[in-house]
Image (cartoon, rainbow over the protein chains, first blue to last red):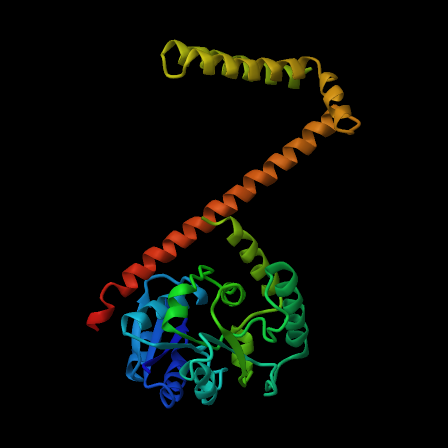
Length: 226
Length: 109
């Protein structure tokens, strides 16, 4: 099956090459979405052997993922893998992420940081916020409590799922949105363990505690969007 | 009181504009009557502020001025929220545009 990895990147020049190359060890074809970067992300991603799509303006991680997913579909991908650009997702888990799809037992597979593989360097505040996010997802979003990771950015899906999941949250709320769309559809979904390496860099660039409120607000506005 | 006078002058000006537009056939006579009713009612409230107390009491609010203030806050809230939604929908259209542009020549590279 043709597998394509999608990596949305915003000004990740110093890290994108390493991320692309480590992902290419497991998935030869990589699409990087340069989300209006102000540095040399575009050139470096290309140099690392990725196919690069460029957003003329910064539109956010969710928007980048959607563009990358559409690009992967254009390339004829049968399985699409979403990976973060900052190198926090351990690509050695990609084979176990796509295995349920290859075996035909799932349409979409979510990587979970809470299924055995201990996250490395996850701050306690982050852990607390993710527990709160799980409650929010269950009560407000109607996402089953069986989902152990409410904000996982590493996932794989087959072609049909990629076409069916019309996620429209441009910024950070896409994780919850994709979970909601997937778990409330007829798509077969499953969670598998993944490992995340938190570094000072990924924590500084990644989500802040205050972003939890922003995500809730974006999801609320999304209800009224046409 | 000065504030009453200022409001009355504004309402009178609004009323004259409404009827000028009606005679210019820009708005229909029915619209002109509806607008006139609004401005005359507003002038009535300015001249007899205690009338709002009756309405306020109906909603369980003590004073007419409070009723108008609460109403104004709610109205502003609704308008700001509508603005947020309009902005969100514009952002989505912008993303769609940026995406289409990004994927335009994708097959060729």
